[in-house]
Image (cartoon, rainbow, N blue to C red; front, side, top):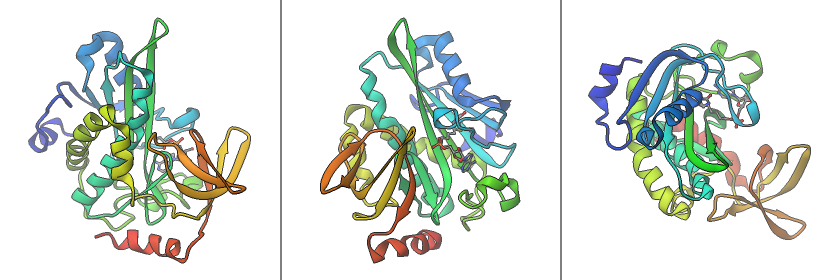
Length: 278
Ligand code: BT5
């Protein structure tokens, strides 16, 4: 990541008052959290990027694969001394910003997979991880981490990811540098965070029509040991997944969609539509 090149394409606002570009870090989320530890509220809007992460992680400690020079690993530090539930909008702000940046900088149309994945052609191109920082028992900061695969060829992914991971290059997007993608991402992210912190439901509204799931699709949602099966019935204003199980709609707040069976003929069309981009 060339800092000067990046700054030619991005004019910092509140987002990016501090910008750190590292060659290698264990995790950009750790570095953003350290900035909150050191600087407190002055770290609000700090952006940390790395060419490589040696211990990149997803939710529940799962690994995030970030080899050098192939993708974007970016974290934003946010000061938050308000209610902890302000964090609920952030994963969606992150994934919506990725959708916009994919479209703007690479000409790709992505879809959101609940809760926080971005898919292109039905495969995962990006993941979002939001972590809260708690000090003295009180929430005092949030870190929004975003990983995006840009230049990976199939052989660049570990074997176990190849069947469901993709990159901008593999999906046939316009070639895009890390710097250009990061700039496009931050331009999209800034208003989404501002809007989302005030009115999370507005982001859910903006995201409607971008979900990979169609009403009626049959989903398996795993949460710990439990698997819940039901038909996709939408996303609630608080961002939770609505699932129709035995005739009743339930809100699911945490979990992973592990299996999707199309409930409508249109669902089969989505993968083709995404691949074409727009
Ligand atoms: C995520 O978790 O998808 C969140 C990923 C967030 C990564 C960013 S990079 C910047 C910041 N710093 C960090 O340390 N993290 C954040 P989750 O939904 O739990 O998905 C994790 C799963 O995605 C793994 O178990 C793999 O199956 C898969 N995976 C790992 N690396 C991948 C990659 N590069 N592309 C696609 N899938 C991947």
